[in-house]
Image (cartoon, rainbow over all chains, first blue to last red; front, side, top):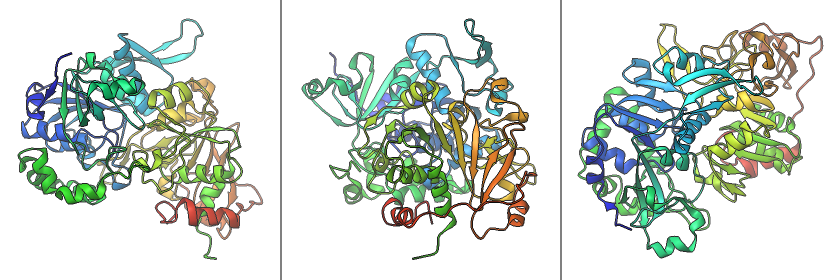
Length: 301
Length: 253
């Protein structure tokens, strides 16, 4: 198997403007912050982002003006507050938002992962979520039908096949075998629905380590295009078993982005004003802060 | 002992809606606290499912949300949306969905997406996430929220998750499950009329006046001639809530 380890700079160079990128985070957990920052540094434009539950990575990319379309189920930064940049962009109409539900996005990825062109669902029925999809920019992606066998009402949705899926994992080898600890939300369906998979791993391990517990491999190497090794790559969001979210930094982020005029200040300080992820981590508190949020082995946070 | 707080009455009332052995999909905040309380008291065999992919967690620290590693602790299964919302909820084995809401109307329709300001400007919030899925598919739905006139309108500003839209039956609408059965607020417990599918008053929390509830409800509501009082939490429930489940008042404060 080939060595697929790449730098985040090279991996992001291979993502063209206008791509549909699926993001692997959930609220304030396992966000692909390292890649989101690099997408912003390389000033990618016109991206479509999809995700079941959005979080800080999505909010950053929207706040930086990289995004023109969202295909999402919902989301927030949990108790830290709403996703201000995303919500504002929807209010202003600067981003075209296709608002679904967690399960309907997951089903669309599942259909994509299975190579079927559509999937039926019993959610969305009799809701304004469906009305807005049917009468908005997503009109071509949803249909109503009755089951040909039982006559029951269903909504049909087109499969999702993102150009690239980005996922942050705890452990991967150089070939791209990925192991995820803790809940996996839509990571598997999302990654396997995409044309290309790029993973960011906290830790690079020998393949022999993967072979000791292959049942934990969620995304196997033959599907993976590139592996980025970036410790604390999801900071300030949490990676179960590795580190907790940084509540102080998340509060600082929310304090900035809740005011439109201060979004730029955050981005200038922590993204555009940093050379790379190590530089960003240094600015965010460095080794001392990372040590403080490092997970305790029994609790995992 | 410190006086009983409205949040404590709410979660105890929520816990009492759950039967031992049931399977529950639970959302953020007070619903979570109510389910944990039920498991620690009368419903030890309750199965708690979180959409992120966690079954029957036993947190030792109060989690701040679904994405908090604290809520993954000592779970019996880690999976994801496809398992929890797909192969459990969509499969039809979830007895109760327990949700919060930005707004809920007289037909139990829930809004978690947006509000219209007086100026006409829209303000967006968290959206559906698993809310629409749970409201569409769970056996019965319980909503827990603050009692304010603007949060209980005649019709929601955006129908994110259906109760009984237009007062129609779930079967008519093509929806599974019995729909919303309870709204538990900091003033009262509401139910739904089986014929009209409209919200009705079931009980008032001790010390709350009927007039107060009527004035703070945006829709007209059937009220019984004599309104029973919502039972207070037991001393053991209060001890569990204050000392073990949410000692830092993340949700109850």
